[in-house]
Length: 118
Image 1 (cartoon, rainbow, N blue to C red):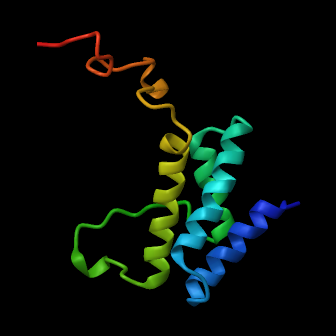
Image 2 (image 1 turned 90 degrees about the vertical axis):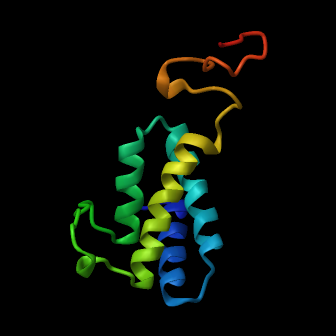
């Protein structure tokens, strides 16, 4: 059974497609759900699939080698924006400055002013 945050994302996506809501409203709604799913311990790929499902988006990405297959529709632009927002929020939205836990290090060389590189 969908919860309120999921309903909010679905509704915000539909309104953005119709032009009845701004992309910023949709992004804000998506970010709230991403933070919640991340807090539950969901991995990034699961979060992306969940958001895509809510927005009625395909799970498949098709690479094309010709310009004729490029979809420049408003729905496609908003869909791409949503996926970018999910990734951005998952990895940087609640990140502590200087931390890169996905690389297995608390700090990168050069982040600590006491450590110098030549």
